[in-house]
Length: 114
Image 1 (spheres, rainbow, N blue to C red):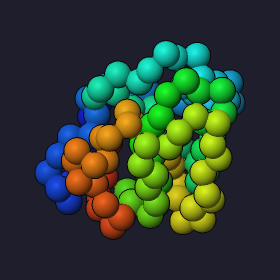
Image 2: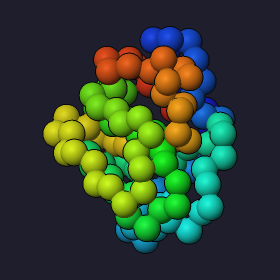
Image 3: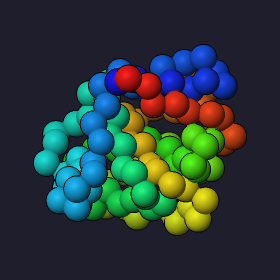
Image 4: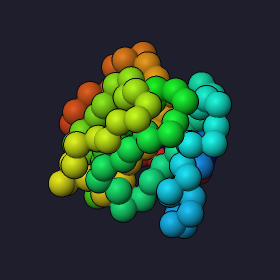
């Protein structure tokens, strides 16, 4: 699977993991020492995240039902709680600096493709 920014013509991730169960959503990236470049964690039905007990910073995108970026956080440090993005229907956690390196912005259209 790939996550593409259709508005910018860039690839955000080439290795994608979906967290669909309660356990996988609660654990998320907590047990990992880092998130590899080109990887992403997708949280369906999510409009806020936390980085409690994580060891590294991440970038986060919040998408509405059409894949439009309605919120983003760059380099979210460990032990933080994000704001609530009311319009968001899913969150994508990415390695820190991915959003800056791909110029991903609010309003961009993101697609997850097989």
